Length: 68
Image (cartoon, rainbow, N blue to C red; front, side):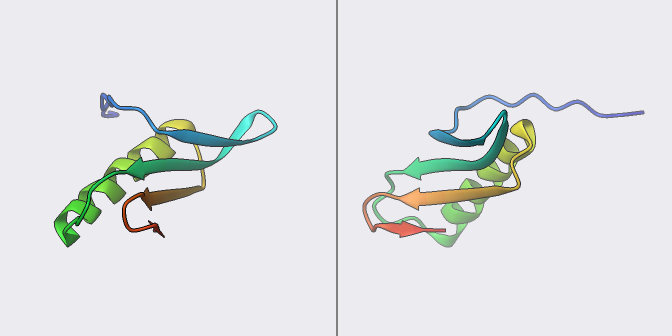
């Protein structure tokens, strides 16, 4: 028996390689994200990647200019 999961949200950008999504990018505007915040953001990104079959993803924190 398989389990279905509903996902709501929107990735900020998708990088396409032909018809396939190769990278999901999600920008965050958090000024000082905690480790808990970063783990939650990473989990969200992984769900976006799974939903579109992307092998790579990037979290971009706009205020600090860091990419994870």
